Image (cartoon, helix red, strand yellow):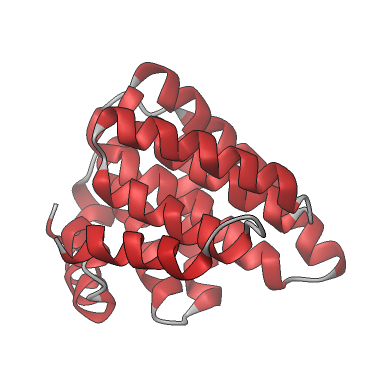
Length: 193
């Protein structure tokens, strides 16, 4: 739980140190859900500190667990969403066959997140946020924006403020109809509250 909190607070180096410290135990003793949780968060932390190749390696390990067994415990949601985010982010910068491969594995991870969100409603905003990021990676900005607006409605309905702020930032950055400054200010106010 501490790593999730540190990641959400933007304390990426601390999150990474916490996860790195736990990994020997995870590799030696953890059950499938724990391994998925650890590698999913490790992938996201590595991405946040710019260690992109290592982020991909951790995401691949987490995805292998997701393929082996659909996650059925609620607390792995940040890790599953983190894996999708890593693939989406890496695909935005990749070219050629590497991009196609990242989009393909990202779609597999996104499908797991989507199925997960059907069982756990609190995962719906993250699933919609990541679906929008996938549309963005596919150069389908209008679909991305529509998806993020749907995610905003769901996040507000569920009272999920962090996800609301995340979606607001995406809308501010990519919706030409949005008042960008006001939308960014709204997202910042949520995070600072």
